Amino acid sequence: MKVETTDTLRFGETIGDADEPAVEPRSVWQAMARGFLCRCPNCNQGKIFAGYLTSVDACAVCGETFTHHRADDLPPYLTVFIVGHIVVALFMAAEEMVDLSMWAHLAIWVPTTLVLSLVLLRPLKGATIGLQWAIRMGGFGGSESRDP
Ligand SMILES: [Zn+2]
Image (cartoon, rainbow, N blue to C red; front, side, top):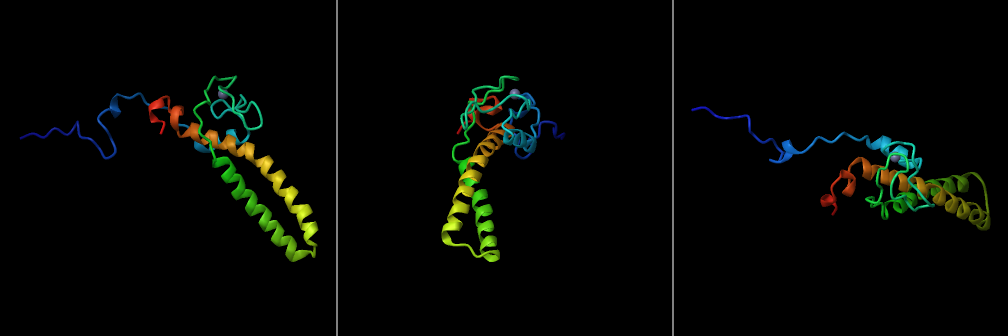
């Protein structure tokens, strides 16, 4: 008795996989770096923001659509995480090295926190959009059916 082995499915493979067109791989780190610099993760030339945090509908250079992104609350979470670690570490270091009044600390660390947050929020949103584009999240994969 002869056993057919050519049509065996491997783990994680579905019957329809062979018929779907192959998609080109996208570099996650490159896309996040391009997004961090507020540039299109696809062509690295077009801008992805029309305002401070408002993303463009599509890249003016390559036409990549950005209406699919779901950055939501991740950029603010990342901003709070990063700025918190920087400011608290600097505050504790300053507290160890120099003797400042509470008003001096407030005058230093409140503006530092505000400026760092405003500077980092936009690039972190760009990096988030780049990440979602690279992993083909939602409509970035070419299919709206993968949207949660
Ligand atoms: Zn582009």
